[in-house]
Amino acid sequence: MTVAYDGTDFAGWQIQPGVATIQGALVEVARKITQERILVYGAGRTDSGVHAIGQVAHFRTQSALTPQQFQRAFNALLPPTIRVVHCEEVGPDFHARWQAVAKTYAYRIWRGRVVPPFAHRYVLHYPFPLDEAAMAEAAGRFVGEHDFTSFAASSGSEENDRDRNPHREVLSCTVVRPAAPPAESTWASSPPECAAAMGALQRFFGLGEELVCVIRGKSFLRYMVRKIVGTLLEVGKGRLTPEDVTRLFALRDRSKSGSTLPPHGLCLVAVEYPEPWRI
Amino acid sequence: MTVAYDGTDFAGWQIQPGVATIQGALVEVARKITQERILVYGAGRTDSGVHAIGQVAHFRTQSALTPQQFQRAFNALLPPTIRVVHCEEVGPDFHARWQAVAKTYAYRIWRGRVVPPFAHRYVLHYPFPLDEAAMAEAAGRFVGEHDFTSFAASSGSEENDRDRNPHREVLSCTVVRPAAPPAESTWASSPPECAAAMGALQRFFGLGEELVCVIRGKSFLRYMVRKIVGTLLEVGKGRLTPEDVTRLFALRDRSKSGSTLPPHGLCLVAVEYPEPWRI
Image (cartoon, rainbow over all chains, first blue to last red; front, side):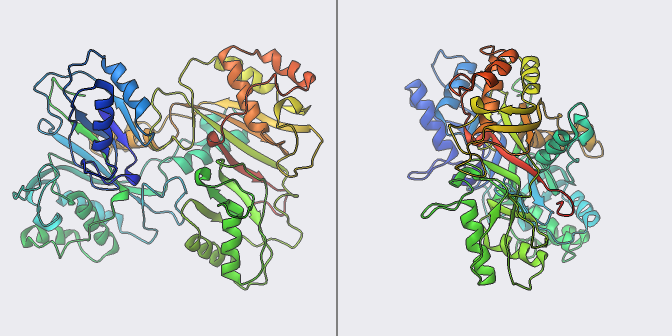
């Protein structure tokens, strides 16, 4: 299943007694649908408050329901803040976590003076000047295989609390400005005030005056994306230089890098699998 | 002030004791800022659950604060679901309600099979077939001056509970499909997976697989926009014909038109004023 969620009201992915979690909600619904003791496994354990548009999860079932029937049943029983956007049958060897070969995260930084009321759950607000060229240069320095001790929580990975290997490979790391919403001329066949209204709606509801840090990697240490983007923000402010990124790798000291940014700007965008499991 | 809000958690615009309303929140904050007994007047009284990106409101004050200082103070004290997106000084004759010459509303109907978790508060979900050509033809029949008795609540207007004149002028009424988000080639300078990620984000957070009914009018009766769009939906389903719209005007019977759609798909997009108050 490909799962999208608004993480605002959940204590993260991982099931925990007594609190609302994404995995907990999926397990509960899967058991209700199948009457089996189902477990649901996710590709990555997103933290409390982190969103997803492309989380991947799998479960084993004896059920004769088709993937489409499962998708409809899940979406009928889940809260509207969790949606199964795709569902397909995979072989018995598939594992959402262990067979993932890459994950892509996006961190949204709102640059405008006012955060629209429809975006405040999904962006970090930073309306002050940033040196975007320096940020782009610093972003490039994260690409490749490195010891990420300086850019992660004190221990653990997204996949495993006891993981002590701090080496990870970042496949790409970029800072982009979303393309402007379609010009009003796109609605040229409509009355001008309708075109203006559509442009205004799209600016308010879509991606707007913001920077997005997009990071793709094989796997990530805990807090690694939020620490990397926190460091890019310090570079943007001029408190660190792009060269400092290289020095920080060598230092292996998490106190010298940027802070761990708040979770609500972060979104798990996609998880990739090798063929024949490709989703 | 131009005010945007997510109406989900508010009992509408109008101030009422004991419940959270937009006007109530603005009045409370205006009084806190100025220490004056301020009243805040809005261009239209949006119903419970209705959103706005371009509501207009005014108040009178003796304060020496500049519009920019007011804007900052409001946004610092208001909840993030209400934002002052613009603030300017106007002459003593300005009145947000009485000087408005046109208002534009948009009603969003989500056509895709799954509503993204980030959109469910702002759209009506209708994934079944619709005859869009018939809807467009029916929409055109609402334009002009008509007796809107068949397309409104039993009495009252947006402006005045005791208003019994059912005549209104609709300036334009169209059914549009939002332009697709910018093609992934827009991010051609980024790695392909970054471009793909940005495209996916924009599809999930922006306007997507939907129809938007955009209605501009001088003023509106209570529930008029939601009744008009409810009727357009019945035309789309084939339960009413475009010609029925013309017959319904003559019937003056609100039980024969489409139902009043739920409020959460509706958004007040813009309010227009004659020069020199133009915002």
